[in-house]
Length: 315
Image 1: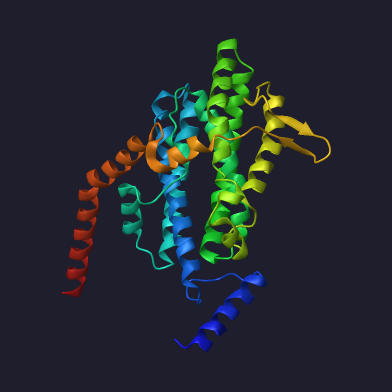
Image 2: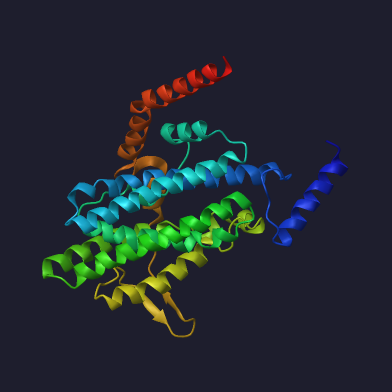
């Protein structure tokens, strides 16, 4: 391609971005834009699928039938979110199976929060309230993402995540207002998931290699630090309302800025988990790899049946 033609295409692309006109699959886009979206959307899809594991572990141990039905519906939603997102990444020319194989080989990443164990029923509340609450902070702005298929997929995802967050907060509220033992379980879950939830927004802006370019392309609308601050500002009053304590001795409200100031995040822990050295990394990836291998016969049988059907129609 001639340099002048490339410059014209880049200018037309940027003009669309500047005017908030969505980029669609058949539109020309810079290769780096495409690669950035493939990386982000596939990692988002992986997170939805891997995120089913810590909660699926508690479906059979839910305290009553209502809780079991709600948790089952939530896990089912997460599976659907993964499918929407894998479909979105395919519109960029990526191969779905290849992206899944990247997850299984350790090449692709997923949200670090899912590499922590769920030790009690209260963790189902903490995940819904904190993890899905953080996800909503991240994902609502993605409904205005510059790439059309991703933005449209996120509309339904965010509606369902809002239900997930309310479900989690209800569990935590019920436990916090229950017996001393139940309240202690809720506090323990908050203690263990608070800091990993803050890490979900990614490294500080100064240490995030992709953040600024993604904002320039309007893939994301707010920086990691802005989203993290919003999450803290919203969540701290919720904890106070139900009588739980945020596990941060440095937490305080700044009257001048109108924001909460919070303590230092342990980024060494974050990077260790990202590198695959978290409490549950190996178990999570092994579970997904085994699921694919053990279900291979079902997919092969379905493909064989489809080929048979086509052959019959053609004859």
